[in-house]
Image 1: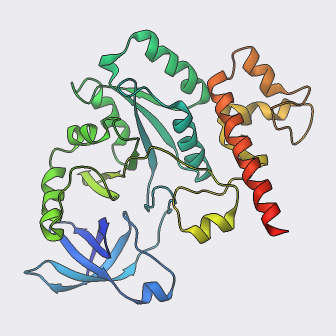
Image 2 (image 1 turned 90 degrees about the vertical axis):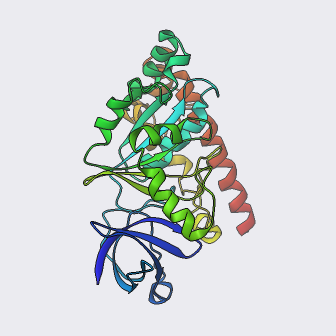
Length: 314
């Protein structure tokens, strides 16, 4: 029996990295299905070797998890590093805020990595820093194309397992190639086994930077739903639906949560009530208007979904 870590899962096959031995192609025992358990990328597992020559085996046990995320579906993660481009394409802050809501709901520390700093002005960088630095998020500005600033990102990742995610075109793959040039060799080995090409990230994949530093490369996303109904998220099986009640959305906007205790009314939605400390903070510039407007849009979406689901239950 060997112990290793799942670095990738494709079509029922799991690729388990065993230190000093290599990557084994494994199937999971049927007992996991009976127990309604599914191996995830990042899982530490025990496996029986079927063939050392073919590097194949069976996963026999999933070791206790530190955590397990819904979006992306990975286990044993220390932080999330979300990668957005400052230009080409223009950053979609509404999408960024939705991602941050999901990570806040999953209680995962998050850092924001803004790529393509070589394509924008200092004023553009200062604007992003003002919005998200004030919200309390660590910010890193770099250019994956030139390598400028990449070392600061590397230091933030050191000694941690970090899930790295971002929309298509953000330069996430270029950043990962900078951080881990050897990753192409490992993914090439897996591609030969599956007879699939690898032009874009289609599955979550764990990449070792060194013995105690891993990054989880996840598929790019162009939209992200935040859902208010537990049953819908569970029954649909979609990993981009995360249950959040509209009344609790303010918990997941850090700067809004800090202010809500000063609102005149308990249960303030921060949209129209008199004596709202959050709206006052927006007016005086303490809270970013962009973040506040995105909060309002997500809140109204959640309220509409909740009303629709209530009508369907009647």
